[in-house]
Image 1 (cartoon, helix red, strand yellow):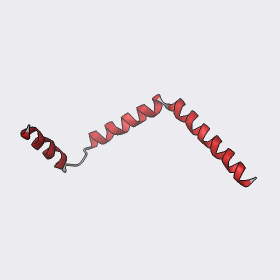
Image 2 (tube, helix red, strand yellow; image 1 turned 135 degrees about the vertical axis):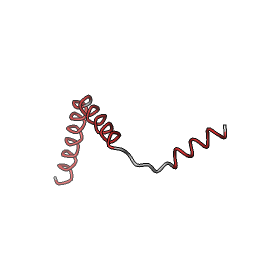
Image 3 (cartoon, one colour; image 1 turned 90 degrees about the horizontal axis):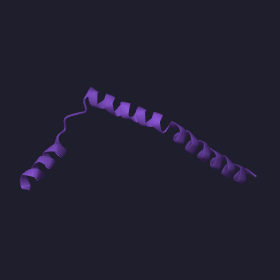
Image 4 (tube, helix red, strand yellow; image 1 turned 180 degrees about the vertical axis):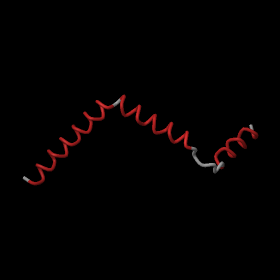
Length: 61
């Protein structure tokens, strides 16, 4: 048990930076998620902008 905690602590303290491959993989995952949820994201943004526009109309009227 103690040895497992030591490994976790050593892993947490490891200050080795991210490599190029890791950054490319993260970007690829983000792009894939954006493409998969593109329609949902667009719908969400349109609804939020519509609500903001309605609220702005109420304030300035």
